[in-house]
Image (cartoon, rainbow, N blue to C red; front, side, top):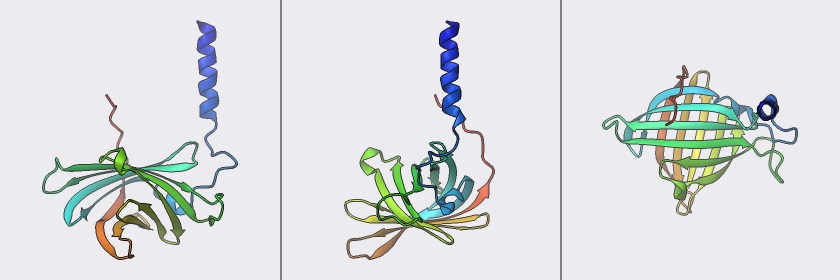
Length: 181
């Protein structure tokens, strides 16, 4: 029994010892890394006022950043939405620039609405576009000190953009997460 426990403990120690990305990993762009932490604010989705909280943190040995977003309608707090985004650098992919970003979007609408995305860093943030069958959703993240702007537009096949969501957030304290049941 003690031998098995020691082996399990050794495997756990080895797996948690490496906290940096693999040497061959594309680095996370600084514009994405700047999201790390917690953010709170308000905005609107298709004209509906919402409150939003965002938490961003490094994952997979700091090779990518996970972004958790949760919002609720101000007029009806039971009208809730959640999204889980994964963002990372694409600089080592063929043809990618050092500022290239790849991502994945999953949300509370389920797997049928998940999408991969591609984008680029900018001096004041980054843009990433998720392609869906009818429209592309362009996400424009802009950071200025402790303030974050996140705008999403729907772009049709002709390149015409329509506002979809617009959030203004400020850096906030991270709250301990509740245990899952």
